[in-house]
Every structure is written in C-alpha cells, then in structure tokens.
Length: 194
Image (cartoon, rainbow, N blue to C red; front, side, top):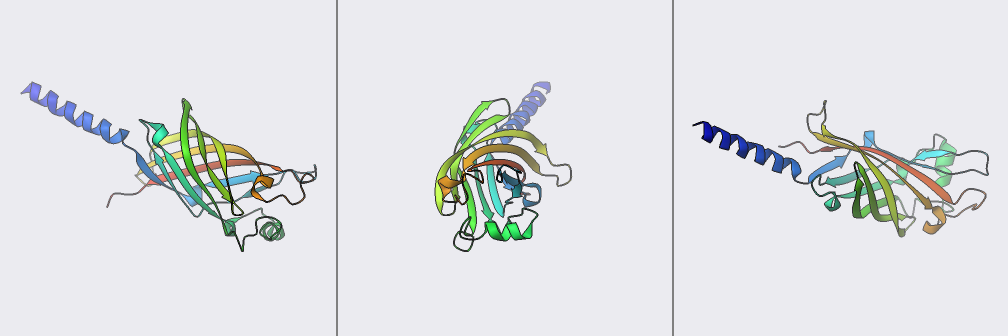
C-alpha cells in the first residue's frame, strides 16, 4: 500500500513539473508596461517619452528559453512626452508620420539565453514603415503567481540602442541625437482558465 502511495505521489509530482515546464503564453499588461525612449536635445537635455503598448503576447518556455517569443504592437496614439505640443510634433511627417504609419511593432526572431536571468532577444522592429533587426538585452525580473490576480505572471526589463535615421526618422541629426536609448519594463499575465 505504501509503494502505491509513493508511486501516485511521484506521478503527481512528475505531472506538476511537466506542466510547469511547458511554454506559457502571457498577455502583456498595458497598465504595467512602459516603452521608454530618450534622446539628446542639442546637447542641453535628454528628454524621455513613453510609447506604451496596445497589445503584446509573450511566450516563455522556462525549460527551453530559446523557444520563447514576443510580439508587440505600439500605437503612436499612445506616445507621451508629457508635453502635448511635442507629442503632436513627433507625430508629424518629419518624424514618425503617424497618419501614414500609425503603429510601431516588434516581433522576435530569436531568444538567446545568456545565463542566469539574462537573455538577448533579437527581433524585427518596424518604425515609420521601415523594418530592421534590433537586439534587446533582457532580464527576467520575476515569474510566479500574481498575488492579486491569482494567475501565473512574469516580468521583464530590456534595453537597446538604435539609430533613428536607420528607420527614416532623421530630422535634425546630428544636433538632436541619432542614437535613441530604449528602456522597457513589462508585466504580463497568463490567461485565466475558463
């Protein structure tokens, strides 16, 4: 009888571990996600803007992180510099041309584990109708049960540097810096079981 109990427990434990090791699909939470980018303004200041997201999906495979992926859509309607006139200027044709290109997208093509909680996430960034590869240096902040939502959750930070002129957004270069520093922080939750 004791052997049967041990076997049953081992079976349950194995099933639990297998379930935890399976890839989990998360939806990025727009209220806990910031896509910040900053630039140098004529050498005087380093403004920062938040692009935000409309939707995003993250698939994370803890057992084989190279099988993970991310796909994010960022509408320029959410662009926020905290200066209304600058928000409008950045949406004009000399910068993002938001009427013609209303969204920025990022779709990963490769995730490379770098040891510990560090990853390099390569993907296609599309801005202003131009798609180029970008590498994000990502850090897993935490994965586990969300204490309020009672669903599996995950959080990452990521950074990158790009040249805006590579995407056809080169107004005022070099007086206004070509290099753009990107910092992302995001939280995502798994869908609740129905």
